[in-house]
Length: 252
Image (cartoon, rainbow, N blue to C red; front, top):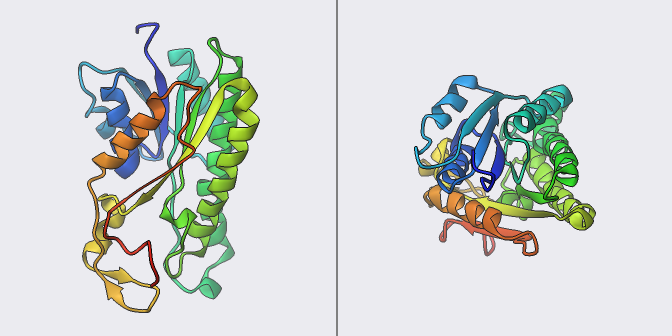
């Protein structure tokens, strides 16, 4: 591996946005650690690697488990020696049911993955980035359009994504003196398995059901690669990439 090869780690790399971003980073020359719960899907992502790109390393991980996260970053550091970019992407939602019908377990599961998991990964990344030479690195958090505006029956997901915005700002501030940059990408209706239901229609704020436009997930991958490629004295603090005609701007 060349000494100039950049090193990235992507959570939720076994599907959707995580897979697209991991493949795009690898094609751009990064060596990438793929983290996710399903080993077979991580291997499927690794199989998409380009021969001209960096190396792919798969490490099955439950990001809600501190020991699993510690093992992930230890394994990545042992393999590659440093970490330049963390894409904090893994996330889940709860059933789209009225808030009062959600169980505490359903709430806690979403918080454990979307918020605590992102914190645990950022914590490990910052420890590595502070100590390595050259010092520093970049953390990119996946915030979602829900970091701005909720969908009906989305309290756990929306609350955690709003919290990601606060986490992004805190990482930016606390990491500044260590040359650690942090930004957030808020994504709206990328065409992945998660948004397939939108092609049949999803509930709107005015109680109607509407088919929503989607965009190619490659646009998201390209945006993350751009954010990652900046020198550490420049940062995209917040970026929104969305299907142009999705119902986000305006009143529902």
